[in-house]
Image: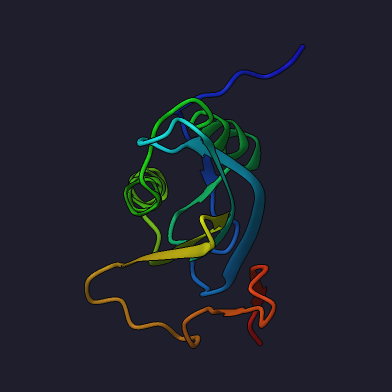
Length: 142
């Protein structure tokens, strides 16, 4: 049975809630539609976060990402919307979502949105991805 796209994000309890640790995910199959032309837009999403009490469950994240396939979205709007939804579901200490869209009209678009819980002081340096010099995407930082 093929799973269906869903706007619902499921979570599970953080197995180490007293420790700061970075969770990094690379999601290479994001698609949405250009709201002006209806043409498909493709992106790789880079999610990194420091969980508090909840972590995002991977299958629900995949189905959530699939739910945008037939939706017209500006790159900036959809990146911020996804971050808002992920923050609402997991309530992380820190979260950053970067969307690296494939070239369109000779323009590469990278959109990064961040959330940090007010008053949170990280025990780790903020997680980071680095822009690949070829323009093809991002690589994890050290």
